Length: 296
Figure 1 (cartoon, rainbow, N blue to C red):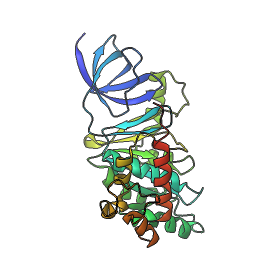
Figure 2: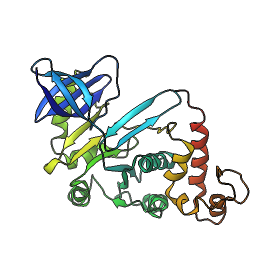
Figure 3: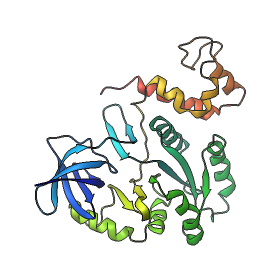
């Protein structure tokens, strides 16, 4: 049967769903390869009316993934924007936010933060104070309330999605699903269809999936996760992925400075002067340690 092109719109284990000009095809890879990500453009060979084999993956513009000591987990391919959803309640993890931002810098993806549940006024000042750290680095922060101000939320976010392939990530409880449902009115129907096509049971939402918006834009919804390992980033990639380090790189006494405890280190000097947040430098040191532990 003839070869055709499609976009991977859902992934669950080794099972994928591709959209080829509006036709949904259940796909598998040849052999045991699982290096396919949602958002990938793939060349397919149909094996039946609704099934196909992935022959090859087209070149990717970007690839976002996380990794632990043993393996990596592809999150999405060909995305241009990432939205990290945080909320006034429950409390969000700065570690997760910073790791996602570092991953974006390393992958060449533009990052934004969405502060949801701004109607919870008691917690709003503290949440604003916490996201201000990222706003000061140049990452845009968008304040919304999916529950109490749905129209305003759509009006704020929709223009940011136009012309882009975006991914939404966040810990459980931040309201990410509520936002997706506002931005993609048929999201629930789509999830049911995808679940059935992937044979994952009608109520599962633990897979990454892509929704089309108008004019070719798309949103990828990633399941909530609590950890974002970056074991795959090398020392050189890490120092460049902390955007506030950039003015100081090359200004250290030693050309191979690791910015940990070396004398006359420009980065450590900036931390001491309050120009680089201590929390961010501590994460850099932690990531450097992790990258030296890699086994794969």
